[in-house]
Image (cartoon, rainbow, N blue to C red; front, side, top):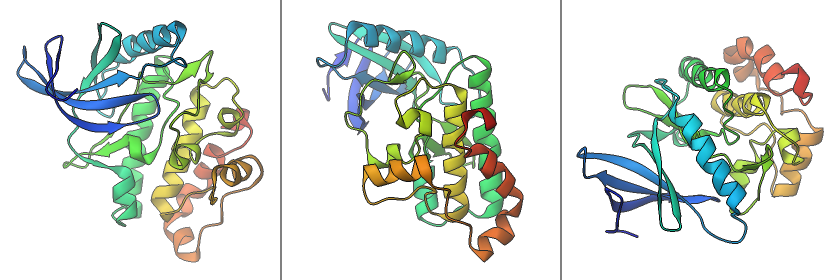
Length: 253
């Protein structure tokens, strides 16, 4: 794929890969700018219906215009390939910030506000992300947070199409209803936002486990580990928010 030209986009490098697609750095030869392009994987599990939903959701996401959401420029098709053209976001994953211990309580508060504003803008347009996690949030050099991958929902009637390529990290952010394969809505994003907030405040996951089944058991049956004394002191204001965001009853979020 590297070096290939698709429409007027020259593929320069691979940026990453996930369960449903591969993301490349590309040059827009018409506008002279770099973009990110995500190609939908092909295979027997990618039905025409899924492809149509992929296109529909990408078009909806392209209408979003918010400083905390990575812009979807458009969608294209080239032979059997279907792809989304997105803003190339230059920054670092929030996950790396958390792992490096760079998120203090003030930073967590500021980032949470920005992530929440981005989610609200999408939800106001009826768009659900379905895969909110710290690896899908970029922190720019100016401290701004941007949510990636709107319009790339892996869904079929509102539920996950497949767990193909789904990492433990993704499972750890799933709401109870999502883990059960039930229809999801904005409240699923709210749960995942709660997981990210807990992760920022503690550096840990609220529903830990050594393997996928143990993580899902914790999501269904357990409460997040209590904050330590220090965490309680700095995160006291967040405690009632976390309880609401991480309510297992979807109607209480």
